[in-house]
Length: 179
Image (tube, rainbow, N blue to C red; front, side, top):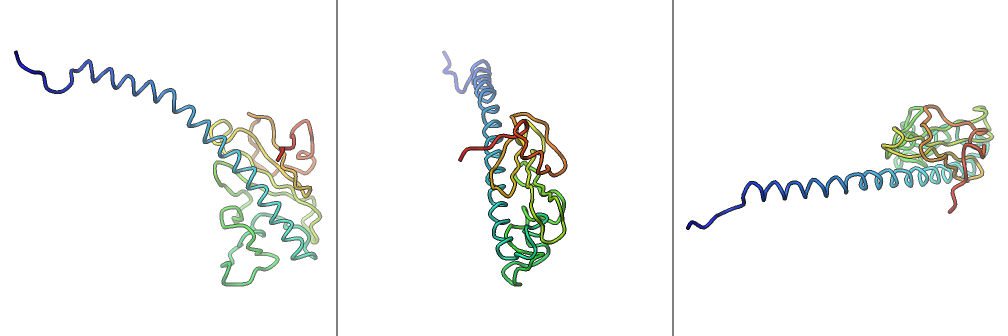
């Protein structure tokens, strides 16, 4: 009688089937973990924007709050080489303080709106919306000068323009996150 070397086809198919079952269980959990991480990062980024706004209004009191994210960022300035200005405060990095109306980071779009762009700017509303709800994030976030981070209910459709101060303060749309 010959001694068998290697594995039979049935044994290999059983091992592959077990690996596929484990993957089918693990992948959805991995995706949920990524969405939760993106959600946490969005709330943290809005806290960073709040801190940058407080620093900005303290440093440039005649300007009021920064009217947009690019003003808080480098806005074409090489931070560390040239001194910050009221139009290029270097308080946010290139990603968060991008030059467009919407900045994208970690599965979320970040936007900012004010009730008046005339200096001194009296207020701001920073908002974050998932690029694709249920895939890159699960809820919308916003904050005002009161520095309270507010979150929408899970699964609310993402928005494509900056949230308004009135909507951000609406308790039927947003609830405050606890620290």
